[in-house]
Amino acid sequence: MGVDLDQLSYSIDATRILRNVSASLPTGSVTGLLGPNGAGKSTLLRIIAGIDKADAGTASLDGVSVGSLNRRDAARRIALLEQNAAPSVELTVLEVVLLGRIPHRTRLMGSFGGEEDRAVAFDALEAVGAGALFDRSWQTLSGGQQQRVQIARAMAQQPSLLLLDEPTNHLDVSAQLSLLAQVRELGVTAIMALHDLNLAAAYCDQIVLLDGGRLVAFGTPAEVLTPEIIGAVYGVDCFILEHPRGGHPVIVYSAAS
Image 1 (cartoon, rainbow, N blue to C red):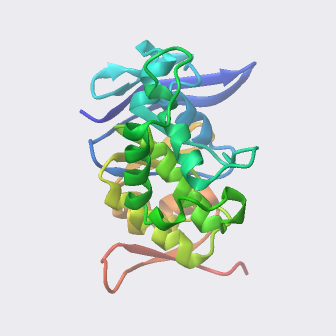
Image 2: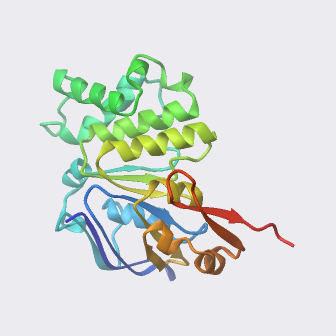
């Protein structure tokens, strides 16, 4: 069970964005989705979420093809946090998180925000360490706090799969480390598009590495993040050390000559 990607391909007009991408991601694991700009990371997340439809191949969650789910069912099972997913109106933190309850409305135009929804929202805020922020205005939060609240909104959907598109962008080092540690502690299957290879090595169980829409490597951080693979994909020289505490790979880049 978990997430299974089987020969996924996707094009826009005549431009091939993804080419025959396959990988199996176990339930409860955290996967880092890596690759240079334009590698196809965001597109792959949107296909897994059921927002975009692949030209060929399938994405399955717990044995069910995502393409067979209607939008409401997909939203109940899969939460996607895209870049710059900020509310455009004045809302409190609790109201932002309650937006995650929309897929669970009992009627087509039914209301949400009752006691059950509020309890789920508060639990989600507590899970990401943001319970004390519930009555704050969204616009008054720091970047790290906003990212935590957005993850709480996604968790309020009560998904079995959490997809995050570059969640550490614009965060300082402390906020990045805290956020990724929080994702690991949530206990749900998660796939995160990341640019920082060292963060991926520290917090991910496995790595999916794309380049030009193709799957270049898939495996543990130690298997994927080697000098040869990094050099071929990113065009940089590097050394791989072992982290003195965690034992995971640490990439040290060589300055350009």
